[in-house]
Length: 328
Figure 1 (cartoon, rainbow, N blue to C red):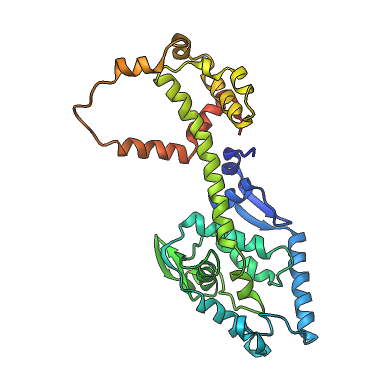
Figure 2: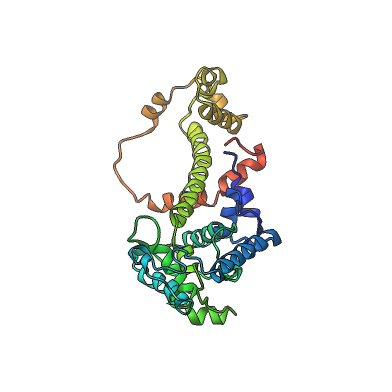
C-alpha cells in the first residue's frame, strides 16, 4: 500500500460521494480534523432510500425493526406512534459498555464510520441524522463512549447515539458532561430518532472496522519510522552498507525486504560514517566501545521524546524533503 502520511496531514476537506474515502482521507478527518462535506449525489441517494422506506410504510409492509420488535419480539407489531420509542429504547438498553472511554481519534473514527455505513443509500436513515454527526465531527464534539463490554459492536455505538439524542455525554475540557447543553451551545438540536435509525446506527461492525483502519494507519506510520531508525542505527553501530546490496535482496522473493533495503540505501547514501566503516564488523565495535554499566539512569524521558517524533512523523518529513518520497 502506498500511503502518504504527509498527505493525510495536509488534507483540509473531504467530500463524500460514494462513501468510499481513501485511507488518507479517513485519517485526515478523524485524526487531523479535516472538514467533512456531503456531495449532492450522496445526499440524493440517502433521501431517495428514505422515501422508499416511507413508501413501504404507507403500504403497510412488515419490516423487521421498523414495524416489528427486535429479536424474540419480532412477533409484535409496532404502531407508528411507538416508532420513536422503539428506536430510543434499543439505544438506551444497549448503553451498557464499561471501561476506559474511546479517545478523541477513536470516537471520531466510529462517528465517521457510522456515516460511511449508513450513507450509501441502503439503510433508510434520514439525511438530517447524518448531518448532525457530520456537524459534530466538524465542530470536534466528542461523545463519551466506554470501550468495552460487547463483541465488537452495539455497546460502543449506543453511547455515541445517546449523545446524538441529547441523553448521553460529550467531552468538554477533557471531562464528560451532559450532551444536551453542549449541543445547544453549538447551535445543534438533538436527534429525535425515527423509523430504523436506532437500529441502523447500532447494527454492524462499525467500531471494529473504524479501529482497524486506525491500527492500519499506525502500522504504516511505524513502518516508515522503523526504517529511519534502522538507518540511524547503521551509523551509530558502524554497520556495513554492503548488507544492503540489491543483489542479495534480489535473490529472495521478499519484495518488501528489498524495498526496505533500497530505502536504507537511499538514506545512507553519501554518509561519511558509512563510507569509513564499510568493512567494519559491528561486534568488534560493540566490544570496544560499550563498558560495563556502573551507573544507571532513567531512559523514559528520552524514549517518550522519540515516540512523539515517531507519532507525528516529523523525522520522516525531514528525510523526505531531502530524498523524496520513500517506498512503502
